[in-house]
Image 1 (cartoon, chains in turn blue, orange):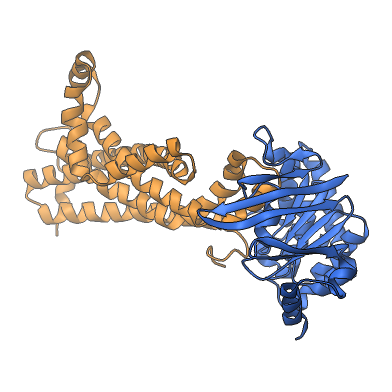
Image 2 (cartoon, rainbow over the protein chains, first blue to last red):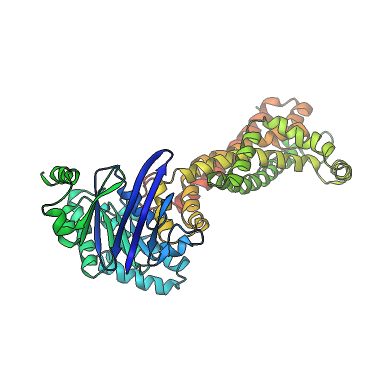
Length: 244
Length: 241
C-alpha cells in the first residue's frame, strides 16, 4: 500500500499556480528524493503531506487518511510524520532533551521519564547524547540538524519528510547529517527528501522526482533518472549541479 | 536648599509634610501597579489576538488598539472620571458618583491601565511576529495544536524578545500616573504641588519628587534586568551573552 499518495494536487497563490496537477506515490519503506530548481514547488509539495501548505485541488492520502478532507484532524496526522527543515527550527528556549520531549509529552501523552528515555536513546543514535543539556544556540548547524532529525524520530513516525536538510549547512557539516539520513534509509524508514545532494540520492534513493515550475517533470527509478532516458529540462538541471 | 520644612507639622494637620510625601508615594505606587496589572493582562490577550488569522479575534483587538492609543491619556482620564458615570445606567452612575469608594483612584487606574494595554498589545504582537514562521511550522509539524504552539513556543519566546520595550512601558506607567492628579488623586506630584503651595519650598519639594521618581524607576529597571537575566536563553542571538 502506498504510504503517501498525491492525487492531482494543485495549488495557487492568488492567480499564480505553484503546484500543477501533481500525482505520485511513496511506498512504505521507499526513499524518494525530490529535486529541481528553486521556485519549482518542491518544498510546497512536501509540505502538502502534513498539511502545512493547504492546497485547493486534488488530495494527498497518508496511510489511508486524506489530508485535504474536512474532518481530518491535522495535529494527529502530523504527529505520525516527522519533518526536518532547512533551518533546523529547534525551539531556542528549550535544551536539546526538552526539544525532543515536548511533543512526546504534549501530543502522545508520554510521561516525562518515558519521553526522556526515548529522547536520550535517539540522541545516542545521532551522536548527540553528550549535548543533551545544551541549548540549540550553543550547537553547530550540523549538530542542530541531527537533533532535529531525532526530534522527528521521537514521535515514532511512519514516514519522515526532509525539506532541504543540508542547504543551510557549512560544507564540512553536510556529511554528518547525510550519514544519519543514510542510516535511516537503510533501516527501512519511508522518506521523502527535498535535496540537491545527488550523492545521497545515488546512494539510498529508490526514486527521484524532478520538478520544474510546479510540475512533476520526471518521476523515475534512481537508475533510470541518473541513466539515459529523461527530459531535457532535467538533463540541463543535472548537468548544472553535477559538474562542479 | 533646606529640607527642614519636611519635619514640620503640616498646615492643615495630618502629620508632617514628609508624611504627605510618603502618602503621595503610596498612591503613585498603587495607581501604577494596579494599572500595570490591567495593562499587562489585557495587553497580552489583545496582542495575541492580533497575531491570529481569525478575523473575529484580530479585528476587535486592532480596533481596541487604534481607539485607545490615539486618544490623549489626559482626555481618557477625564472620560473615565466625568463622562462614564453619566452614560452608564442611571443607578450605576449614581453609585459611581456617590457610593463607590475612591472614585478618582479607580478612574485613574482604569484610564491608565486601558490606555497602556494598547501599547503593551503592540509590543506583545511585535514579539510574537518576530519569531520566524518556520518555528511555528516546525512546532505544528510535531503534532502540537495552535494553542499549544502559543503556550510552549510563541509566548515564551515572544515575551523574552520584548522584555526591553516592556520595561520602558512599565517605567512609563509610573511617570504617566502623575496625570491622575488632574482628577484629584493625591499621588506624588499632586502632594508636591500642594506642599509647595503651603510652604513656598517649590525648589526643594520638586527636587525631592524628582529623586523619588528616579529611585522608583531605577528599582523597576533593576527588577526587569533581573528578570531578563533569569530567562536569558543560552546561545540565542538577541538576548546577549
